[in-house]
Image (cartoon, rainbow, N blue to C red; front, side, top):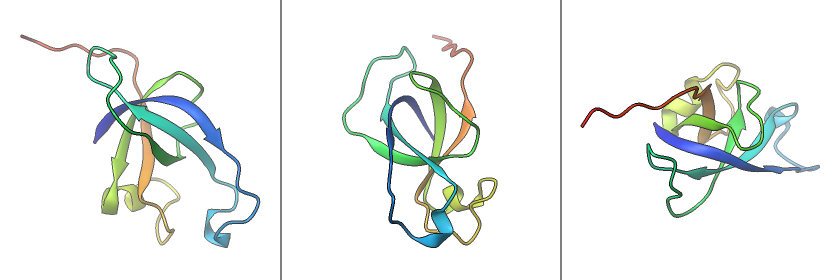
Length: 89
């Protein structure tokens, strides 16, 4: 699982029919204190996440286990919206 922030959306008028009806979001991985990490990920939104929200993203076979993603060509899914992050040092 990775912690990420929603930074954009993807509109694809032509895509695999199994992805019809899914919202695709661009997320940027972040550290627990909210600092940007390198790269971006395109993820299927299964929890109605919004712009700038911090989310939990799963990838690989775990992404296909998310609600509604079984037997779909999905490599990353947003499975949670984060309210707070607390790191014990």
